[in-house]
Image (cartoon, rainbow, N blue to C red; front, side, top):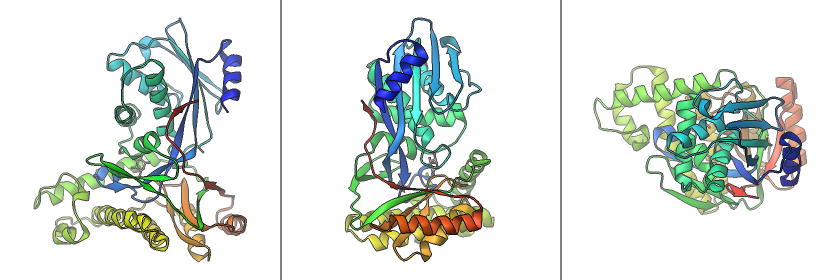
Amino acid sequence: MKLKLEEKFAGQYHKNADAVYFTPGRVNLIGEHIDYNGGLVMPCAITLGTWIAIAPNADHKFRFKSLNFDAQTEVESNKIHEKNGSLWANYPIGVINEFIKDGKEITGLDFLYYGNIPIGSGLSSSASIEIATAFALNHYFNLGYDKLDLVKIAKRVENDFIGLNSGIMDQFAVAFGEQDKAIVLDCESLKYKMVDVNLGNYVLAIINTKKPRELADSKYNERVQECQTALTLLNEEIKLNNLCELTAEKFALHNHLIKDETVLNRATHVVKENDRVHLAAKALNSGALEEFGRLMYASHQSLKELYEVSGKELDTVVDFCSGYEHVIGARMTGAGFGGCAIALLKKGFEEDFAKGLTDYYVERIGYSAEIYVSEIGNGPVRL
Ligand code: GLA
């Protein structure tokens, strides 16, 4: 890919690229809609990701082109604080804006991107673009940020510039990912442990429902708000910084404060999902894969019924998995409202699974899902 990107860069900008970088996407194994509630999540980086080639220019402009899209976006360096029409380019624009606000002198640059993460699929193509840009600029200009600084900068871009009130999981996962390891991240303290993902006789399948995620951002922000409401109500009786400070038992003592059924459901999901991540981390550590799989199904059920972020397409995939002999666990991953599911599938059954799922899915949804066997990859690198 590096060579192809360098060649395309020369064609686009009539000069050579100076440096090429890669940053992965991520899947979250378990712990969904937990990060902005201060609990534990368990993502890992995948080998799909974003490539970026850069070279400076002398004309005080930033030019953004992606091999995935036709248009090129051009921004004068004194306009970098403004959002631009082109949706994807706002991620790098937002990152450069943060660097400049922080006093870094970055003037003209030409960028060429390529990504193979299906867009809007819940595999964090946006965090991948943000961290790809931040990592590349930090390395290229020797700006002196560490990885956690870059993660926080990228999160600010998402929250303040893009307007999605997301947590820190995605940016953290793509920046800190390591091959064949999951990150068990405490989203409140930002302490983390790398855990070996030893799947034995199983592989991690990713199933992209290909459902377009309509209104996903506004529904996401609504969930964040509902959790905030639950927290405010619980604080009438106990002192809490976030919902994930509660175990299910403790929550049961105070949940009478939440009268609204929807808000109660949201908070119940959060508290129980957080407990599940603790159990899942133990299961993974001790090689109890069947237990891990059971927790994945329970997570999905809760996201479907209590948190209401699944949907017909994701449920159809998980329904198929639960009836398929050689899958021991499956769930939606990421924000939901479409996007991807993951499944623990017995090695050697990849083709049979793909065929069975395709027939089942097409019959109920009317079009095909995409199925990949995922490898757990490393974080950002210069190539
Ligand atoms: C999106 C957000 C993350 C996280 C997940 C749900 O991916 O960007 O911060 O909240 O949804 O777990």
